[in-house]
Structures are given as C-alpha cells and as structure tokens.
Image 1 (spheres, one colour):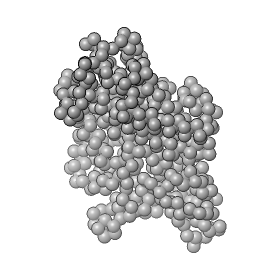
Image 2 (cartoon, one colour; image 1 turned 45 degrees about the horizontal axis):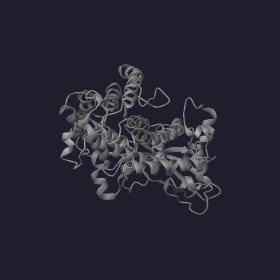
Image 3 (cartoon, helix red, strand yellow; image 1 turned 90 degrees about the horizontal axis):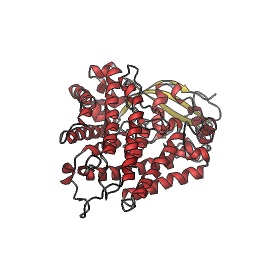
Image 4 (cartoon, helix red, strand yellow; image 1 turned 120 degrees about the vertical axis):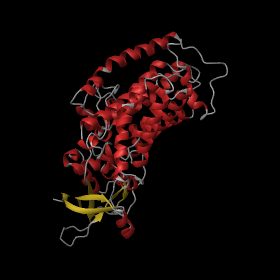
Length: 472
C-alpha cells in the first residue's frame, strides 16, 4: 500500500516513539512528586472539590470515578513504569492490537491527570503532550512501516504549534513587530535558567536578529513541512535548532523538547541513516492489515473535522492561545508570548516566629527551587521537568487575580508548616516549628549589569515595591 505506508520514515518513527516515552516519563514524575501539595485531598485546589462541580463529559478522567491520594500515586507511578517500558522498546514485539493498546495506556493516564489538574495543568505543553500522545497510538510497531496519514497529522500539529505562535506574536505585542521583544524577554520570562543572564546581555542587534529569526521560523518554515524531501527535512531541522535555542535560554518545561520531538517525524530516513546505526528488519516490513488501514483512515476523517475550530481560530483577528475545543484535547490551538512583560516582579514569601508583629520583627525568607529569590543565586536548569508552583508564582506577581484560587491556601499551608507544601520549596526557614505569621511582599527584579555582577556577585538586583499580602 504505497499510498498508506511511509517506509522512508521508519527511523523517524523510532526516534519519535523513544523520545516521546522520555517526555511521558518526565511528565508522570512531575505529577507524582507534586500532586499532594497542589491537587491532593488536602492540596491547594483539591481534586475531590473539582470533580464535585465538573462533570465527566467536560473532563473525562479516571479520577471522576474515584479519587484518593493513594490512587493518584498509583496511577502516576504506573505511568512512570509504563513510559520506561516503552522507552526500552518492550512494546515493539507485541501484536499490532496490543502495541496500539500499549501506547493508549499512558495517553489515557495522562489525560486523566490533566483533566483534574486545574490551573496547575493549564499550559500548552500539557495539551501538546496529550495530542501528540494520542497520535503516537496509531504509528504502529517497528515491524511495520509507519502510516503516512499519522505522520501528516503530526506535521499538522507542528504547523499549528509554530504558525499559531507566530501569528499571536505578530498580532499581539508591538515589540514583536519592531523586533525589540528580546530586549526584555530573557529577563522577564517565567523561569530563567543558568544562561538567561548571558542571553539578556547579548547586544541589541543580536536580540533583533533573534526576533526576526523567530518570525521566519514560525511564519514561513511551517509551510515547508508539507513540501517534498529534502525541503521537509530542512524545515524540521530549522525548527529543531530554533527550539534548541529556546532550551538554552529558559525553562519552559517540556514544550521546546516536545516540539523538537514532533519535528523529528518530518526528518527523512536518509538523514537519520548516518546518525543512527539502526536498520529495519532484515526480512522486510510487514504489510498493514485491512482493519488497521480502516482505523487510520477513520482517524484522518475525525481529525479533518476537528481541524475546523483551530483553523477558524488561526484566521480570526481574535486569535486565542493554548485552547482545546473538545474534551479529548485533540487538534488544539497553540501559541506563546503574544505579549511580553517589560518589568519583572516577584512575590517573596516570608515568615516569622514572633507571635506579635512589630516594626522590629525579623522575617525569614522562603526560597523556591526555580523561581528567582535570593539575588545571589544563579537560576537553575529544570526543564524539561516542570515546577508547577514556581511557574504559577510568576503569574501571581503579574496580578493577584491569577492566584486568587490558590494563593491564600498556600500561605495557610506555610503557616501550618504542611510537609507536602514544604517539599515544593528549596528552603523552608521553619523546619521544626511552624511560623506564627506568614506574609508576601512584591519586589521589582532585574538582572544585574556586568559591572554590578563583578562588584557584588549577584545575578539579580531587587527593589521592594509593596506588601503583596500581610498577616491579618
């Protein structure tokens, strides 16, 4: 079936499947390590409270049927182990139906987590993993050629991801049009990494070149994904290189890495041949059975219908970012940084053991793992691992409205010295006895100049703006 099979992408499929298994593994580990404090039975936004008001049809999830922290942990660890099995290729020797099932399991498990994750899982990389994971179900085992239809569907994901992000920038903040957004972005992005200070101090012509290259990559290159080879491979390589640049300059969970992984499916087999010493089975690849062909064709029809909503969004002057149009999170719309903040604010949490707050009261600062705190501390690299509380603290600093559903509960958890919440922090100044009071203060942060860095050893300079939340 020449029209159905894409034998030239056998290695592309192998790379994609193994890399996707790694991302699944990271995603499940992130969920297991953080869920108790965020969405557990005694978390900041508990799952039981959520499922009581949101019906299954809107948020299909295993946890709509039953929830306990022990059950969530079991699901999360099952996802970790299942992803590890897929990573080492244990599914490759299974019959076709079992292989499809093997890839359906982590998709169903992670979809269940995302649907009850609430604000902590409201990011584009969550829906991207669900969409890419769903398509991975139908790619087939290594004994068969990958179906061209599914590969095209993955290229369509990549097109929407890149082109949607490019359009939202062009339509949004003026600084993207005058090529000045990168004057600010490396400093004000949600979670800088160890290289962000150096990226911020690149000359302004380099920042303008970054912005111009972004427009080319996101507004022109995506169309080349549907061109013949070797143009398609060239387009995929451009996407991979530019996403790698973003990996070097910031912490964006697995968004950039997963984008690179999806792009590998557009790289032709000849390009992989000299990189990977892996060959198809010596006996040749099996022909796909008729039932499998029918399933994939039906899938294509469903995806074509579901594409109406994201296409309409792309051409709309009121384009929105990172939105799903169906409860299975298929054929979503994507986008990032339609506007860029010029000034960085940080919410700094402090506690005191003094039972009565006086002007002389000594306050001790809580330190987060990823978000800026101590000005002398170099930002760390965490991506593709996702620190969910740290990311939401960035939004809280922009406006208290973003944190209304969880921030008061966070302060109460710190005041009560909740162990699960404390584990989300890098430093808890009250490891033995809970504080008497907790407060939040708003600071203006900026990267130090090269001269300030040499003189003080600090990566950040911060100035107190005001109280963000004070003890009552």
